[in-house]
Length: 235
Image (tube, rainbow, N blue to C red; front, top):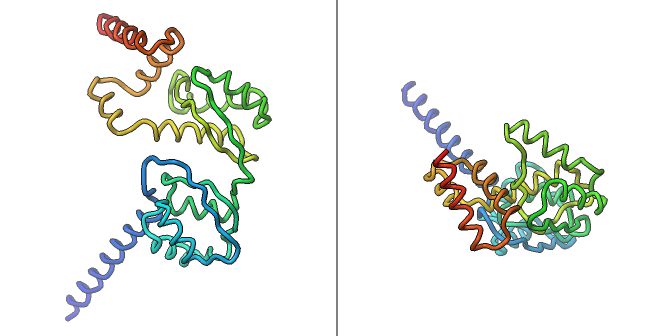
């Protein structure tokens, strides 16, 4: 009888652990690895059920049940702020809730545009002109990250794109936003292709940066890339 009770308790604990792991995945895993920004509005008086339903219908979360349950057990329902937000399918439920709690609405954001061909110094100058950072802050942060990750530098990792950042963003926030964007652009297929060539992502980025500086025409880029590859193979 005692063994049966122990076995029963063990099964209950195992079931609880499985359910808990599923729940954690549900609130921490985004619905997609890529996707476009979506303008999402929370009006005054909207309840958690309505917000979750709207998030699900806009394909921003997989299930409103996870959203509702997370809000319930965390006791954050009263902290959600009304307003117009910019959300993305790459955000997890947990990240979306934090955005709602902080009230990071559209009115608190600004747009920056990183142009193709810009180097780190160009980006630093641009962000300084836009009064987002003090001069050389972006350069300083990227140099520190390069040291931490044992890279020569971070040149080529800042994907030319349009970004939305908060008005109070610091250099660290902008760098993280841009590196996350690069990581999202680098698909699993690309990573597999790079691995099959016995290359590292760093090697590909360095080569791409060199070619981009030397050649502007796309067809010529392919020729130069092939030439560089042959030179590398021949030492």
